Length: 359
Image (cartoon, rainbow, N blue to C red; front, side, top):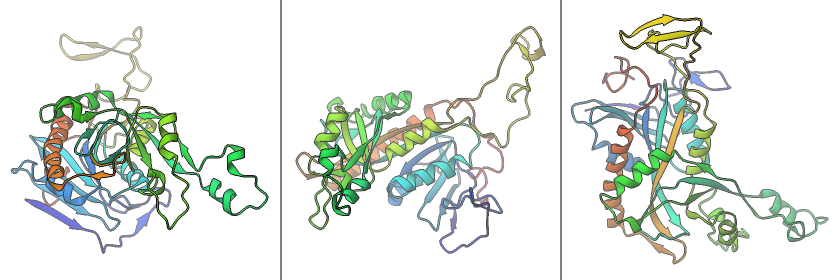
């Protein structure tokens, strides 16, 4: 049972150039106004459709196809609200997805990326990677300007200027990563599940070390440079670092609609003493108690199928992809609903998973 909205031709008036939304509250690119606190993000919309087949059959599934290439499905899995969101590829799409989703959801968010990657580490095609951290690999455009455009510049090598920048590591949520690894062990041997670090690259080609005779990318030594800086580098792809980075940069969870209970509200500089025997809340000026929201409002992890082995140039067989999508996809859903959130939105009649006609 689906409620479907196709916004591919909708041109609603937008308000606020700083963070654009429509008058009814839809964010600019993803075109949603509310999703679940637990989210799986994928690149391929067909993978999102596959995962949606495992959602509860007795609960409506809300679908939204945006004009900017984002695809959202929201329903319930084993009675728990979840959203599955297809976002395409690359840094900008992940950045937009995380920011606009954060702006539509009350309370804490859990986001798990399910995708594919190449390997430069111990793994090979058909294995799984659950990266404990990620770093960015970006083309250093100034290097190429100096190299080709400025006749007065000495060679880059003499100035120790590199063609690619490799960032420091941002880490995933450790609990989620450990749960994913444990769940995968039900389907795969331990030597086919890898952790390590992920390199998130700003190109499928140049910054992932692929050589293209049509362009001077200066990337023959890139893997050596990456491994020297991050010896635990295991995988290459184009999204995970942005997710981990934004999760670590996220502020306290915004609360738009909250139950008016004193235990859920932040008390304005008041001191409280909770009598646990009768659940009454009493004020005591001698006891200082602060009700704090979580520091970071986003918890993030990723899980990837190894599609390519960059050491051997091998590519995955489609039959293996289908198997991994199934077993790992179910593992992600089970992990997603097993984690307790510190604070989440109310499960009211306005939630899209409760009201099939809600847009």
